[in-house]
Length: 119
Image 1: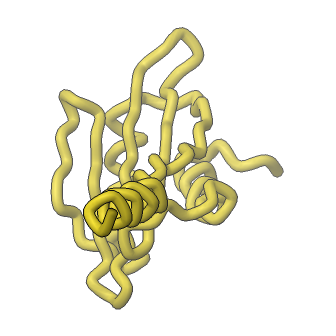
Image 2: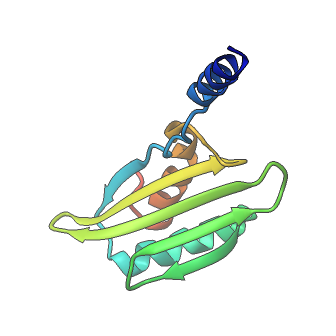
């Protein structure tokens, strides 16, 4: 009987474990060259205090982190399409995804740097 209770207890505890959620991306199509977009993303993130961990123009990918506790991470990916460059940003803090709307100020500044901001 005791063994059954232990198995049930472990079963209940295992059911409480939650798989980490994938960050929801904030996406935007920019009428700019992919190389220019990546260059501006890297510059912007560095100015905001992020350290670029990985940047690969061929893959269209930039990963940046901020060492300040609890630790922030931004992943930017680009894909060239018929309308320009498709940019996707995701962010996490302490391993937990951040809401995508928090990336809007970065996207607005990126548009301004690329000369695409609304006037």
